[in-house]
Image: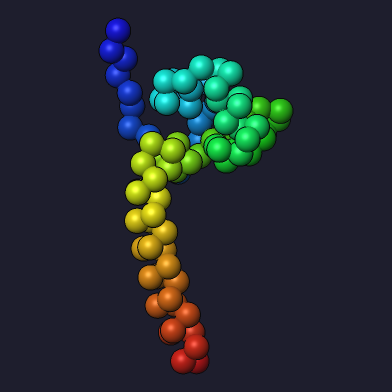
Amino acid sequence: MDEKVEEIKPLGVYTTTETQKVLRISESTIKRMLKKGLIRANKVGGQYRILGKEILRLVSPSLELEAERSYLKIKQKVVNKISKW
């Protein structure tokens, strides 16, 4: 039973059920991960919403590290430019 997994969109918003399917984990596992803070999520109307970038971070920590480095480089360029004013 090979289910087709759709591309995870970094800025997409996913429910816990959708996240479970993507990560192929049980309901109890996702609840435990949320409770322990292993998955960052926001509660909206009593239900958790998880950003796609959070799911990507779980499956590819190196991707998050690369994104962080890019962000810091851009931030430094902005700081340097602003400090000249």
